[in-house]
Amino acid sequence: MNVGAEAVSQRSVRDSRWERWEGRLRERLEKGDLELPPLPDIAQRAMAMARDESTSAADLAELMNRDAALASALLRRANSVALGAATRVASAHQAVARLGMREASEIAVAVSLRAGLFQGQVYPTLANRIWRQSLASGLFAKEVMRSMGRDIEIAFLCGLLADVGQPMVLNELGATTRAYERPDEETAASLARALGPQFAATAVRSWALPGVVIESIMRRDEEPSEESRVASLGQRLAEIVVDPEAEIADFEADPDAVALCLEPQEIARVIAQADRIREETEGMP
Image (cartoon, one colour):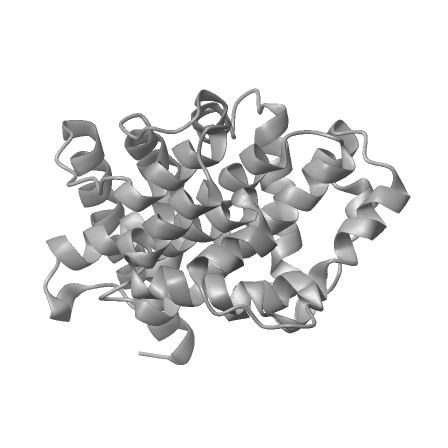
């Protein structure tokens, strides 16, 4: 067999394997056979606390103190160089007071989701990259929405959860295939990108999320809402944080930026947050 024919044969094998893996995942989706992960309890409670005006900093600090990873992430953020604080805080209560209820609750949601959904037992390197991308997407989405003078809490959740279906695909591949027949990491990443939106849409229907967040995920490909566009733009902006070789695109011409009526100076201000957002993503567990 010559080199050209061998390459065609190998590509044909890869294509047939892709079709088999994709078909198996789609069949499980259609039959409702997926074991969908629940939204972590701490994430639900932190979101509820952030929206409840009667909740105090002490209440949220107590919740976060129950989990060592949460408390550690909270203290790291409160004592980060980016905040420029003159004195270090040593307790969760002090950290919540410094950061504010909204940012502290975002940390709680992000870290609990990381542990519950993005852990990646089978594809840990890939799952970690998706996690970093998702976190950066949420942080950029928040900055985009801030430029528009809208609710930044909702924007963070929309950006953070935009790709939540991808780790679900990876987990499903791990649960339904034997080690010797699993796709390699590159193929798994392609399957996650292709099927992630359907997995996410299936999961969020059962999660206790604000309606606008669910809608942003359900409608991202058809009649995208404002929040969907903000999340999508956040995802593309996140590439400049996650990928060291990524080039800053012409975001002024980005379809979502245009649809959101973002001015060039607003886009420049958002991009200028890249170093801070990189530090925040690296500071998370």
